[in-house]
Amino acid sequence: MSITAAMVKELRDKTNAGMMDCKKALTENDGDMEKAVDWLRQKGLSVAAKRAGRTASEGQIASYIHAGGKLGVMVEVNCETDFTGKTDEFSAFAKDVAMHIAASNPLCVSAEDLPEEVVEREKAIYKAQALEQGKPEKIVDKIIEGKLKKFVAESCLMSQAFVKDSDLTIEDLVNELRAKTGENVQIRRFSRFVLGEES
Image 1 (cartoon, rainbow, N blue to C red):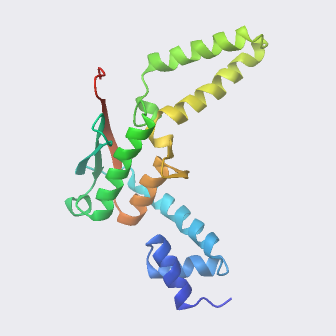
Image 2: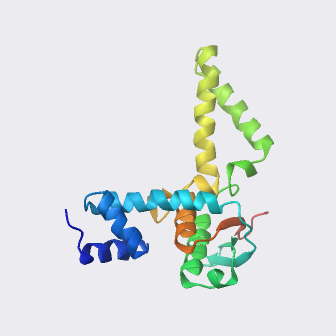
Image 3: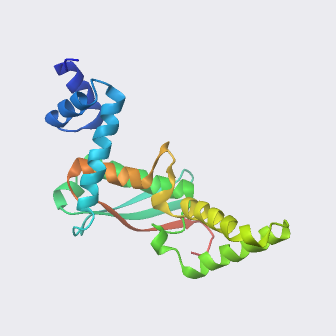
């Protein structure tokens, strides 16, 4: 199948990838637009993984105040250069993350940040539930493992499904921004404030 300039432009508009990358993606996938998008995303993820080790000390602190002023979030999102940290795309990403935190109330940024005592408390609850339901002792550990995996996915910001697009996790969004900017992008920390609640 011949790849037309219009097809390359359409893919570029969809993904913000370079012209040559778009042409290669379409060529590799016989002109199939959806497969080409997936191909570019996978390529971006591998590039993003290489960047993850680089120092990210620029960026911005974004905030989101929910309607009515009873819920607010501040989040620090880092990148490598001041230039990238000031772009509209980076600002929009940081705002989206702050809004997501307001809606989803994660406990921490990633699984590594979950306090050990929280993990142990959850395990104890799941074990008690399984035994109370009369589950055999030999499968209790598997049940605990499955429930803990779900708890981590729901409690840690990076593994949560994005509120604006549940097909993507926050980690997917970070990786896409890494691929687009060519920089290591990280969500460093956040605070969520609810009026009248102790933090």
